[in-house]
Image 1 (spheres, rainbow, N blue to C red):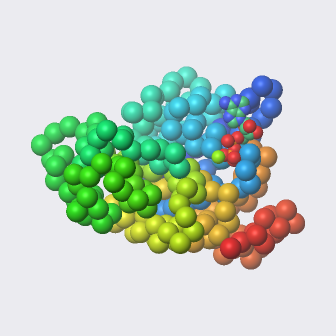
Image 2 (cartoon, rainbow, N blue to C red; image 1 turned 120 degrees about the vertical axis):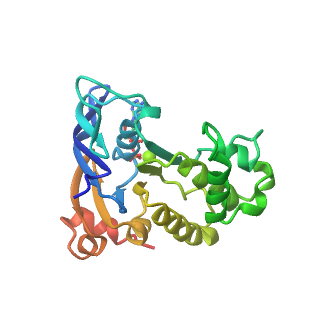
Length: 239
Ligand code: ADP
Ligand code: MG
């Protein structure tokens, strides 16, 4: 069997004496989308930043594709972790064209082919020479997805990537994004505070509260059998 694309164990992080990430375990299997779902301030972004390697943990272990990327004794820098990132504010480089944004940091003979392949997948092939300011928010988002996928990350970390989009666009972009990620075979850890988004996108949900994972399972199992009254109330907000 293939190893999990991402496996984190016993991650702990304190800020100023307060435990923000409290013994978190998470697994993302190949081809799957796991949603880290919970209210604002519960520690989702901190967990993602630790996995990405831009924040250090106090203890715990992270494996990407069966390879240790950090534990108490060692820590690979972000660029050696085979991880892709998409954040709400992860803007494109304004002075570079669409093609230059997508190929940024890539090297080799196949780069042009890869750029064309990805821009085709995200429906942006006709914008290859445009600059970001010539694109709508949804179009910029599509290019950002292509850029994040360009180096073929083993796992994509997404932190509320759709929250900057207007309501009319959001559902379409969510569906398109999922389709592109599935076609690339990229596993995903998606952070969101919206139960509706998790229900729409996740293969598995990990419900987080006050730094802890309080429940995990398939979306409809969690929705139909919330672990406690707080979880039930949280899911009643769904839209
Ligand atoms: P979420 O993404 O779920 O909204 P965060 O991980 O951003 O939550 O934050 C969890 C808690 O940790 C919050 O109370 C936040 O204020 C605190 N926090 C996050 N980053 C820092 C930091 N660099 N220094 C101190 N406190 C932080
Ligand atoms: Mg956050």
